[in-house]
Length: 515
Image (cartoon, rainbow, N blue to C red; front, side):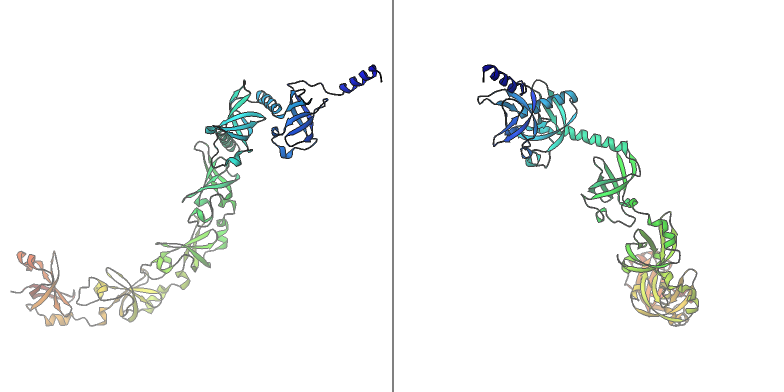
């Protein structure tokens, strides 16, 4: 072959290669992956070599993959092109930042490594510095951070060094502001949103709606009674709620959980007509009555006056316990105010309708002492009724100050019916009426002027009460006692008196000092 043919072949061979220049970015294909280097075919007479560490995604690198590289040198000592993946990416990143971003904008970046004072962040191949004071990575390990992709705010663009200073702290703040702005722009009352329970208090739960917190009040959690929000929710729970109220000025969002289900009160009148007898569960006990759950979300109140036909005071805590099943009758329904009035006593029939015929005046009846007041004692009679023995009807002669002096709770007693007032639900009973009235005899046995010795039981501003024996007590009038003598008289003193008045009708005996 002559020289002309050789020259022609060489020209044909060299013409098939690209004309590359140092300092430019070109495309090539990976042809071999070594331990330290990667060979890239860029269409030149020799293959180029790239340091393997410059490929951040080494695990995904494959033969035939197209990559962009920077021509560092057209030929090294071994006759190979020296290429750089990092420099290509930096040039690409710098062009992207220059053309589309400015200081204050948000960019995506991933943490490459930790350095003194902060972190190095890869932003489109460009090296950015994240100062530790602007990192805002709390409770995140270094292992989790490295390689992670986050949003950053460009704080400073260094044109000379082709580098950036970025802030995660300001990016987070801007993201929050953007999320809030989007929320207030797009949300309206009635929207259904999903959030996470952030905090629980006695009055409700705060729900994170993705940058905006809303309050789910305890009254809007369930149609049923809720004693504490923790009965239904726990921190970290995901919940689907309805927006009940929006106030952009105060940044307040009101949420509802119970509104996600139908209101059970809409059909309450049809489900529980007045007069219905039904069983329910005791869910709350208060001094004035008992709340009973008829079904999920529907509660009624048995007022204390509807528990028993008995007149005496009732202790609801003694009669009921949370969880008790009780049978009740529906008395009234107020759907607008969500109230149902219930009764237990109506199931038994009204015993007062037959009280007058069952307890004729003057009849002797037997009952059990069921309670006391300062002025008397309650007696439980047959027929679910109570009667009252007033202190004045306990003894003919003894002035009873405390009914528990002579009676005990649970004691069986025989009494006389003095009156029955069915309309006002009152039965008056007498204990002293079991015996004959002794005052006619007392008057005969103690004529005026009779002198007696007795014991002082009490003194007040109108005289001194004296026990004359046989449960007989008289009053030594104040005007019958010299002032200096009155001041020396004490309870339990023995004193001589004389009878100056006997009032049989009023059942009183008046006394003066004996000479």
